Length: 322
Image (cartoon, rainbow, N blue to C red; front, top):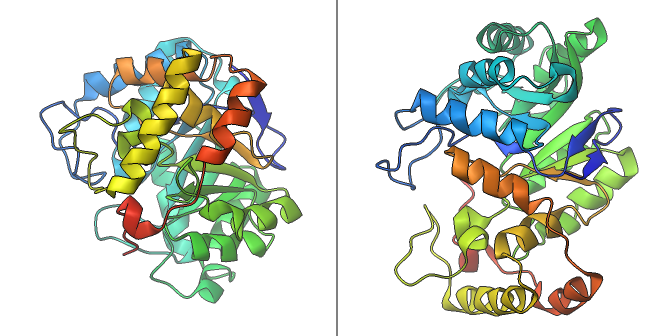
């Protein structure tokens, strides 16, 4: 799989990573359930991660909130891949559903817990997780989350400090401080959502921040396309959006490529976007995502796709900022 630099961290990562928010979600569980709210099938999740790692994925994003860190650690050991070749990212500040603590002491405890659950003595990246209910000035202070993570970076316990926030405007504000090495960006970059280009991308360029795209497939719409009767988790897309996706599907069919490959590869054509981190519940999804990163797409395809890529309002995409 192709790789790109992860901003200023000095690391190279596969352009397709693995998000673990829905790792091991059984088929019987509702796709609308939030991360951390369903009963994880440990074996299903382990098989997914091992399959992804063996298919060339070198970036895994997890979090205490997802309850998937133990599976990530086990998969790293079971897969046989070189640990040093895999960038392992986790988060701090949001240890569980409805739990938030962005104080320095709390994130130090959170990281210690993550190291134990993962069975590791070093983390490549730790991100502040959804710091939307706290004063940003406190977050960035010595007594806040950033102060704690910066200390751990200086001590060599972690390699880089990231921000991971579902509010694009707040994420842009954190990136613009210049203090972060990476940023996980949710609901802000896809063939249907160009929010990233407004504030996040310019700030990332200025400070050489590696951007990682969460929710890259619009809850599955850009993974499978428009299918009659299909539900896309918690999203309700407007008829105009579904019509546009149908146009994109038709173009993909003309070139014999999947909309999944087009959607994931389009993301990383932006200079500061290092990788996408689509979620995978099982091994089949992990393998399909990884394979999408290897598909060859001619420049003519991108030229013809370009006019179909437009920005849609949140209401059209069914996105709510809570």
